[in-house]
Length: 273
Image (cartoon, rainbow, N blue to C red; front, side, top):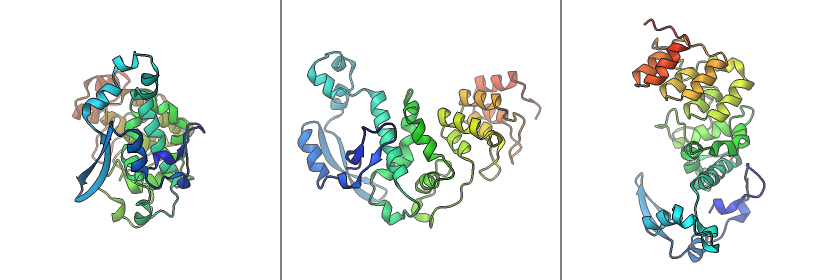
C-alpha cells in the first residue's frame, strides 16, 4: 500500500503522498496479478499479519530467470525482474518512508505506516546488493544528517547496534549513542561512511557505544576491508584500544578475519598485546 503512494519520477529521494493510498490496495494488486500472487496469514511475534507473496516459489524463479530476460519480447520487457533494480526500488521506498516520518511520531502513529518497521530493519541490507547504495547517496545523506530528526527516528524504530530494543519500550526519541559515521560503519555502508568521514574528519576517531568502539573497530569486526582502508587513509588510529583493551587488529583476529589482520599488520599496526 505504501509503495503505491510514492512518486518514483522525482529522482533518488522518493516523495511520499499519503493521499495516494488506495482504499483497497490488496484487491487492486491481486486484480492485476491474480495468478502470480496470493495473500496468506503469517503469525509473527504472537500476532497474525496478512502478507502478499508469490503464489509459488517457481513464480519468482521464472520472473527473475535469465532465460525469461533473454526472450526480449513485450511480456519479458514488462515482467522480468532484475535483482539490482529491484533492490534499488525497495531501498528507495524504505528510505522514503523513513524520511517522511517526523519527530512527533509515536508507537501508535507508526501503525499508520506499515512499511516503516520493515524499512528500519532492512533498508541497509538492500543497500548491500551490488552497487545499489550509489543510487541512494542523497537519501542516505539526509538520513544521517544530525541536524534533522531522521537518524533518531530510524534508530528509535530499530537500532542495528541494539536490535533487542523495541520502539514501544522507549518513550520518545533518545539521544544518539554514537556519531552518524559509527552507525554507517556498523551497517557496512561504505559510500555514506566515506562521505561522513571526509566531511567530519574529527569523527574518524570518535568513541561511542559506551566507549566500546571507534569506526575502525566496527569495520574490522565486520571484516569490511574497504572501510578499514578508507578509515586508515583518513587518519584512523590503528592503535586505539577500546574499554576492553582491544584494538582493531585484536577484533579482526578474534573473528578470524585473517586477510584483514594481515593488512592491518602491513599498514603498521602495533602487534604487541
